[in-house]
Length: 131
Image (cartoon, rainbow, N blue to C red; front, top):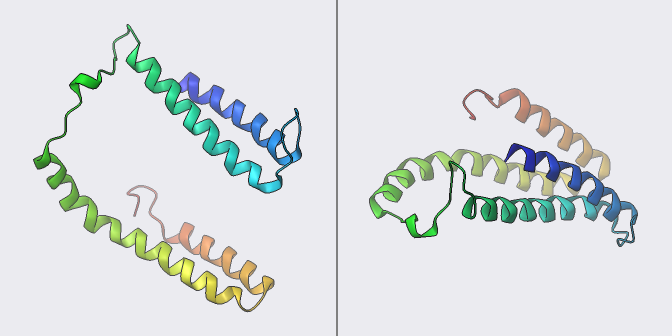
């Protein structure tokens, strides 16, 4: 998987450049080419990894016949995950709403708020716990 991720990163850089600038016969999409390349390469790498794990003779082999969902386990997971997900949802939602409001005051105000909100997020985010 690590080697596939490295290869995927290389492909993404080349594809992003090609889609942004219109190189290698690809359409010139501008800045939209960057996320399109990221999504495309992530999907491709996911498919390659799933295929590799399903047809691998190594220590790890994915068998869809062994895939099962237990309702009790999902209930336990959601009892913890749903309340824990509210804080980041509200944080991002607040930033989205405020960005829309500040955007009405012009490009300079929007740029200042964007920089400030990112700095605030970096300062208040606890990277050890993810909170």
